[in-house]
Length: 393
Ligand SMILES: [Zn+2]
Image (cartoon, rainbow, N blue to C red; front, side):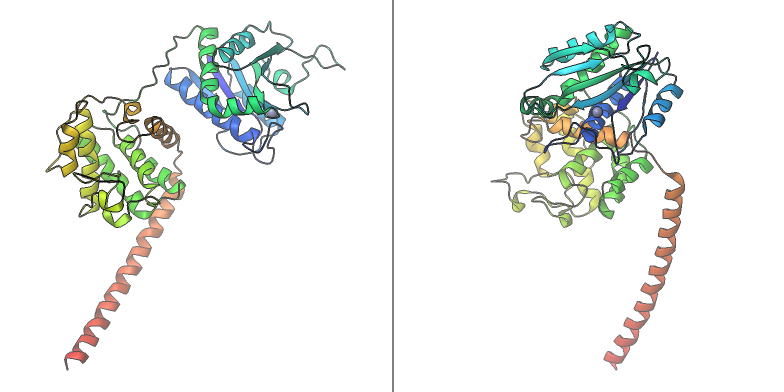
């Protein structure tokens, strides 16, 4: 059994379900990537027609679906009409299917708060033997449903979609499982302990794609090193640091030269000012402190001498009890969704594709540049020595 997820529209085609809050092509991509990751997590064979903001012609899109040899295709869309009062979710199935899948999906969406509009199929008025919509018509033997989650032209639907898009996306995942008889669980908890699932190259590529600073990109190998030393997941803590430091750009209170990679505070902070945050003597020391801090949460042995704040966390009643990333919300940071946002970053990281050829080129370029700079340093040293000898004379 194989599923293919199709994020509607993309690239030069924004779709029709747009408003001042989102474009249909972006919302469908967000929903689709979530579903793709979740179905994979559940052990289902899954494909996706696009992972980026690219244009696919109807011909190309349906060809991708047919060639994927999937059993089911979920084509994700957002509706829009001129009447701003029209609202709700609707699902379109082929005239050649009974609509069972569509009904299951709509029922799940309604359970998550979507308004029930309808399930329907539509034949081409010129040719009643054919489906009207190309996704239903030209996807061959793949059972395709078009899921219209909400009306972008309706304010109530829009607000619900903005708040609940993840729930809606999950509803479809649950519906698929029920339709194909696959065991479903929504225990999406992410364990803090375990080996990294990301490679160094992938972490560096992801950081670079997010316009991280060189220092932050360089930190990836230390995150893997301390991950294997502590048994905490280095890739997860790297994502946490990306969140805390905005990919090393330090756009918050803490500054880059403090080597504080996770917003760790001093022993007894009095507020949330720069002086309430710890400064570490080196990058490695700061990363070691990040891991040690998490060790206090999880109950692992710290590496070397821990920083002051470690002992404060150790004395809290929930110290050593934390197991999952989601539990960090309300503990590491006041925001309840703190852990979930780290999880989203991790998903993005794990889906980063590595361009090995480009990477090799870049690496060679860096080696050359380093040689050149070393040469310049030698020249400058010579000049300095000459000046020194002149001054001394
Ligand atoms: Zn659409």
